[in-house]
Image (cartoon, rainbow, N blue to C red; front, side, top):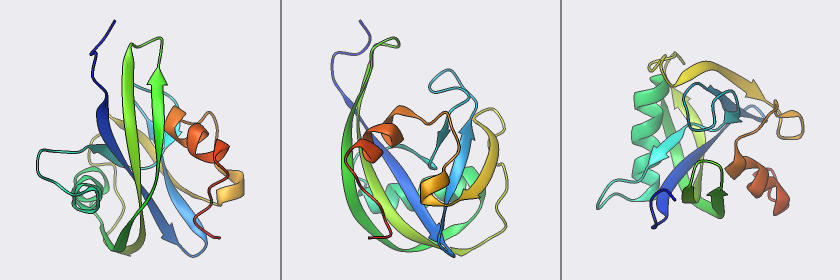
Amino acid sequence: MGNSRPKVGVGAIILHEGKVLMQKRRNAHGDGTWSFPGGHLEFGETPEACAAREVMEELNCRIRRARRGPFTNDVFAREGRHYITIFVLAEYDSGDIRIMEPDKTEAWQWASWEEMPRPRFLPIENLLAQGFSPFR
């Protein structure tokens, strides 16, 4: 059943004017769900550096004041995948938000924390189940 070892994912919670940036995913892993920008942690990389790299690769913008936040334990039973997702909180800094990887992203959208679009990617559902909010 899939890879027997969990992988480490990083999700960037980008804050701007009281909202967070959401990605509508387009790929086999979480296809059609809404998530935060992010990706796999590379060898020797910090979660903060991973978030900055992924944000630049995926949407062509920069973040500032990146800091480590909570984590979730995410088992995708149907897909046979297991991730530990480390969330990084950051502020939007600069750049025109664009879809840089159309094979992975259908849309970008700013949303309030309370009204995030659905369906949501499993790590976000697990994060919300912890009662976390970046605005508290």
